[in-house]
Length: 120
Length: 108
Image 1 (cartoon, rainbow over the protein chains, first blue to last red):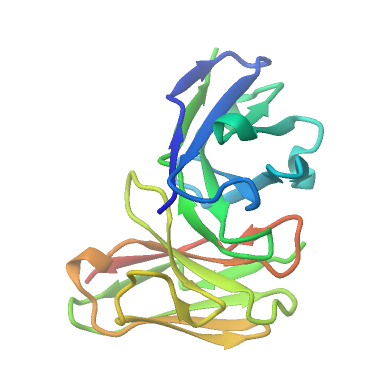
Image 2: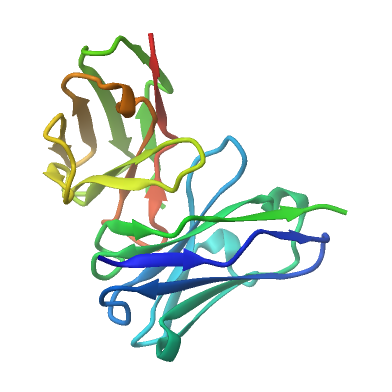
């Protein structure tokens, strides 16, 4: 059973960047797509992008293109999501989630979420 | 981008009753549709994939149906632990993967 553990909560200033990590254990990691999904307070789920670690290939939602960078370190089974030029609207819980295969598969395991608060 | 629309936004149901949730896609997603359950303070949990296949460990109370653009999640006899928010998600056309806005199932 895969277990995804994310880094802790962050408080950031507008205009700065945040980098959230997601470490996988207990199963196959490298060949499966890892997605990042965010949820603003009281809102729904929004897919930001993802990576297939074994290839290092990424896909991003157009909304976040140019502002988000997703990377992976196969040696530590860790994926990272960096979001730049933060604004108050980026205050949200950020989740990593593993696809049961590529992006054409459901998200079968999720991290516990990381709250990012953007405030002056 | 495929837009997913869920209805109703809120569903009030008594324990033991059946709940029927709907999800509509703006264009066909074949059977590449998943349902997730989310409880307050928790990450979403996969319930159904392939429109109708229950994920590992999911109770037979949950069933999914549909294909193309119209999908349904049915909870046959609501238990206290089933009161939560439910999201549908398509994984047929990407990027981006897209989710519905959610249906909150609350106690009547």
